[in-house]
Length: 237
Image (cartoon, rainbow, N blue to C red; front, side, top):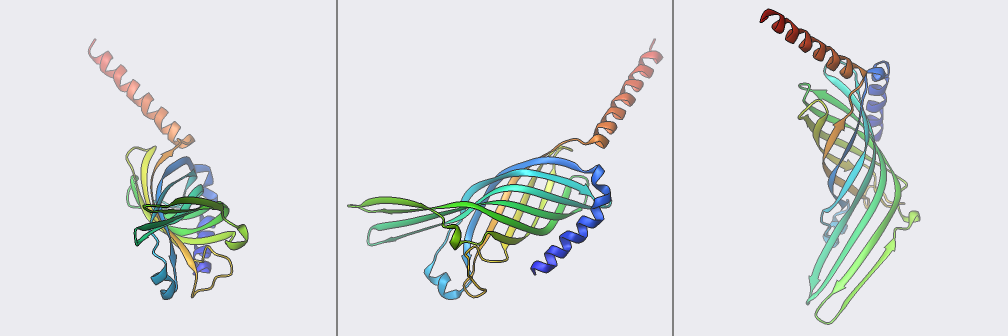
């Protein structure tokens, strides 16, 4: 599966290389809801994880491949993790795990129109740091402790498969919804039977900067508008 998505990204990249001069660059940011999903059935029964809400932010480039297809590589700061909570005999135990990554998605987009598109592609994430917070509270007790994530216990690189859609309200401003499924586990020395994978939903805004082509078209449109006004004024004299 990883080779398939990697091949897809490399193939699309080679097609788009010649079109890089027409690329649009932009920034994006938004919120995500993520969780860590155990693969083994026995682990799933003992670990009840909920979605954790956080944010992501970064930059992107939209590189036209054809009239319908666009390649969009991105560089994102992504805060992921999970939350769990249980209450037994009046004692509430909660745990929050945060994992921060530098993520590089490479999305292939199909444009139904200049405004609406769907996308699919691979992504690779480099682990930066993390933190775990454990809290215990009850009628007669309350305690909290936190610890940094041990780098020796997590994978430095995590791979995922992403799919989503987007809509531009204007040529520069749009919204993007995306789902990312983890391919390999976040924990080091894990295998297919006990891997804990990160899965997340992303919803955010995009701001696309105008390139030279857009500016030329805008200038041309303004010039044409001025010429029309001058013709109308001349005709009414």
